[in-house]
Image (cartoon, rainbow, N blue to C red):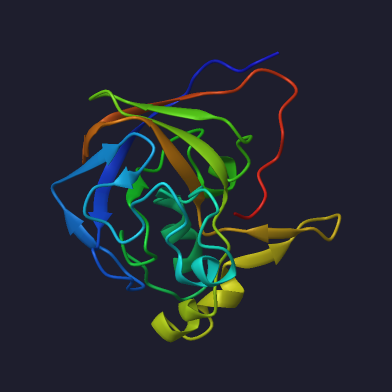
Length: 191
């Protein structure tokens, strides 16, 4: 049985035309169907992430949009780190709300659609895999972005990745509703 859609709000949006660790907070981003965030270094039909381009530049871009819940920043603040929206390279920071906490966001199944109030729709493809560059940003933060569950499985906390199904504008204050895919659900893996 599927759960009722859960709504939240966009806290902030970010983009950067260069491959830098953090992204600049902007008033509005434009999502383009099948491509990603207009003006962002990860925009394109095929993979744009530098390490993945080296491996196979023809693979589809499953990392067009990166989303993080604001609650992740609160979580790592409890471990002594200060992280603000955009600093972990996300395109969209979701405001903390029931159903949108960092651990709930990364627990959504592959294929979950996020519908934004101005029309855009993205589909979750997997988890962002934290990289050691996080320690260049703040020493020790890489370890804080990983932990093991009770079964010994690795938990990656650095948000989710998505592809754009329907384009349009996204800005702070927009509402977003999640729609789960049909059963059976598939857990997200790193992409």
